[in-house]
Image 1 (cartoon, helix red, strand yellow):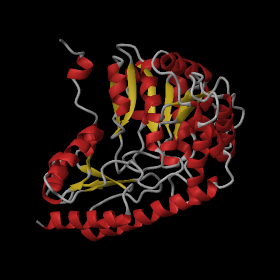
Image 2 (spheres, helix red, strand yellow):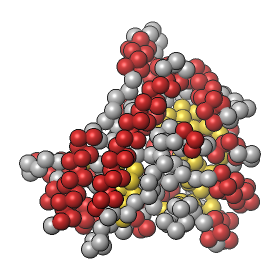
Image 3 (cartoon, one colour):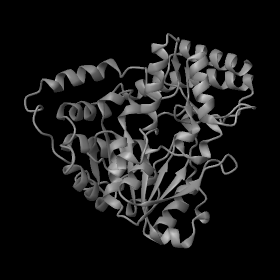
Image 4 (tube, helix red, strand yellow):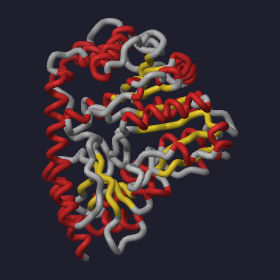
Length: 392
C-alpha cells in the first residue's frame, strides 16, 4: 500500500513526539516532570461540570448538532465579543461558527483558502499547525521572522511584492505561542491595511486572550479595529480560558464569506460539536461566577510565572517576561547550540520535558519553551532539574 506524501513526507506532530519521549522516560523509571505541553492541569469550575450534567440529560441533545452551531451558543459568542472586546454589529447567523477547538478551525481554514501554488504568510517561530495545513493544501509558505529585536512582531515591509500578490492567507497569533508576546494596536492597524491592499485573508488565532497577567494590558481582538471584519476571521478557544482542552470546543468570528468557506469544509468533514457541550458553554459565557473564576485562574498562572521567572533569572537563562499565555520562550544556556539535543539530553539525564524551539520553525533553533500548566510543586522540581543539568 502506498501512503500519501502528506503523511510520508512529514513527521508526527511535535507534541505527539514529546508525549512519546516522556512515556519512554517514565518506562525507564525516571521521575519525570513535564513543562513541554500547554495542557492545563487546573480543572474547570465546579459549576461548569453541573451545567454539563444537566445538558447531557436534556432530551434531544443526543442528536446531530447544527453544522454552524446552536443559535443559543452563537448568540452567547456575539454577547461575549461585545462585552469583552467591544466588538459590536456581529451577525450570529452569518459571522460566527462553532469549532471543535481552535486548532481544528485554523487547520481547516487553510483548506478553505489555499489551492496548489498559492502563498501563505506565516510569522515564525509559530504553532506548527498553520504551516502544516497550508502545505497539505498545496500552498507555498513564506515565513516572516519573529525576533527579540523586533519584539516578536513580523515586519510587513519585508514581504517581497511578488510574494504579497500571491498570498491568500496571513496567519497571526497574539498573544503568541511560543514567545508569549502581545501585539500593540499599531500592528493590527498596519496589518489590516496590508491585507486590504493585497486582498489577503487574516486568520487570527486568539486562543490565549484570557490568559493574561495585567488587567490594564488585556489582549485585544483584531476585530476591535476599523475594517478588520472585511478581511479577517478570528479564532477563539475554551480550552485555555476554562481549562478544558479535552472538551474540544471553540469558535471563529468575523467576515461572513470566510465563515461560509469554513462551514463548507467542516460540513464535509465533521458533524459539529455535541449539543450538550454547546448548551453548557453558552450558559458558561453568561454565568454570574464566570469572571471570578477567570481572575482566580489568572492569579494562579501568574504565581507560576513568577516562580519560573525567578528561577530562570537565577540560572542566567534569557527570556521575555510574558504578559500573557502560559509560555516562557528561553534562549539556550551558554554552551548549548542544538535545541533538540538540549531537550533530549535534559529528558534523558534529569527526566525534565521541555519543548525544543526548533519544533516551531528554523528561528526557534536557539530556544526552548516552558509551559506553566504544571502544579507549583512540579514546577519547582523541574527548575531544580534544569539547574542540576546546567551544572553537569
